[in-house]
Length: 231
Ligand SMILES: Nc1ncnc2c1ncn2[C@@H]1O[C@H](COP(=O)(O)OP(=O)(O)O)[C@@H](O)[C@H]1O
Ligand SMILES: Nc1ccn([C@@H]2O[C@H](COP(=O)(O)OP(=O)(O)O)[C@@H](O)[C@H]2O)c(=O)n1
Image (tube, rainbow, N blue to C red; front, top):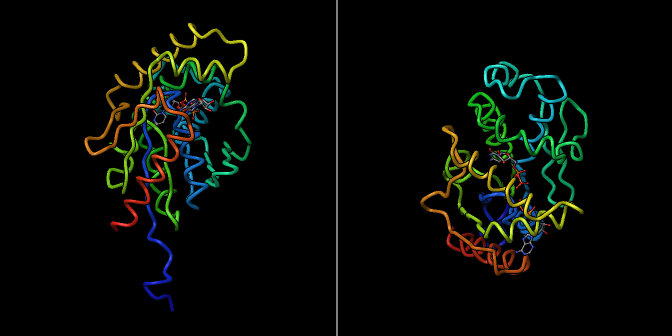
């Protein structure tokens, strides 16, 4: 039998939200790997359902067509932070979900309430089954998906820093065009009626503009360790 002295630490649920390019994915993966937690990229799930809609000829400018199809694809997320996976109906879509086409259409699909209800249920069930705890990153995790999370972080950074980071990844893509596309997507994600991108009242805001990725990771690990110690 385990005693209090050698018992495994209690499962910890961490929500990391914020706009594109603030460092959510890199921070969440690294923190989860360091602390032995699971990891869930909820943006990848919205991208996956968008990829399926586009691939199946659904008109993504028509919310009723999106709503009618929202229950059809089966989306499965692998939660190992060192090798996260995403499949749709058994097909690995990790590459196709990152195309410009999917990126430009994902905000319209993710704004449809039927899509959000379905994906939110999936996210809650994944978080519940993570025995050691999980880091979940997205836009509405602290506000809507996991309002009882042990720790909520809201990452921000200037549009210039975010655009420079993103265009550094997408080789050859212009920084100014990337900045405009990011600002447009932020506005759509923040302005939608159902669970918009927003900071939860009890989230810790971290501005990453002037921080290195290593500093952001250290900051989040420290906050989690403080929460665990207080549990
Ligand atoms: N603090 C930081 N300083 C510099 N580059 C960063 C920082 N945080 C993340 N990056 C880089 O910016 C890019 C976008 O980061 P990512 O974690 O994918 O952001 P998000 O998930 O919020 O969109 C990646 O190439 C990542 O390595
Ligand atoms: N919890 C979430 C996560 C993502 N999303 C949507 O999914 C899109 C892609 O999210 P992402 O995290 O992959 O975006 P990037 O930060 O990689 O650019 C966002 O622009 C939102 O429209 C959402 O609505 N809710």
